[in-house]
Image (cartoon, rainbow, N blue to C red; front, top):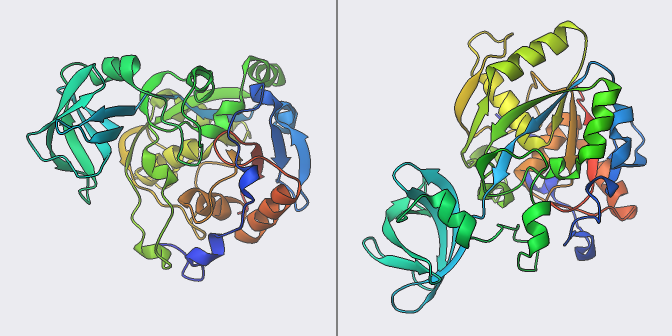
Length: 350
């Protein structure tokens, strides 16, 4: 339950539009890193991260892979349609967001370019905001051939060949995300090699990030907000690595809020409150100030949107007042914000 002393207004801030990064840094690890672990912030480079961690720490990544989830098409009447595939289902079916002047009816077809027709089966999702579609072939194959990179709504340019590479982590493996785990976009071969040389171990979880990650909270009372659901998996190997790290006195470092949500979601499903168990399934975990973290000690994250669930999560993790001060510093120091922006590293407040 969210701490009732906080309302939506507590997570608002004014961001100069020019600080919203429209393109990635020339090199992944050339981004800036705001070290927010102590009371006073320190401006660093992302390449400094390995030196900030200790031998024996465990860095956990989200190994999801972003799919080309955006499709452009038209209805039989000629009206334009834009689709954003949210979830791949069995039987060549998907759940998708559709934007059109008039919503297509069940039983109708939508043609995506000159490529293929999709059948509209009906509405989907807990609030009926999605459409249930059937594709004529494997959706992953069709999206790879005909889809576009699903860049966030605050990036104003159309996707380009560079986005195919850069809006994807270097260790992406399991396709299913429609948004990147953006804190991990900064890692490259050099940083990973430096982490290994430092004695920092690695593990992975999977959380297929949905488009709902960009949706702002619209209710002043945070308890009234309903989170979107995302599929995740925390495997036995990662659970064992976390247990071994804890036993040896090391810290658990989450690369990004999606990794943190996966780990904390699995912990909540463990029957024994002191034990993390493997789990795969859905999560709609909404983390706000007052949440008791059970797994993660350190968080690497990007800068998040005003009034977003992700800003509430990092405020819960590192302390609301501390995060507000860090964001104020970041704006004054002209850090780059959001998916293609810079990063920060935080320590758990309690």
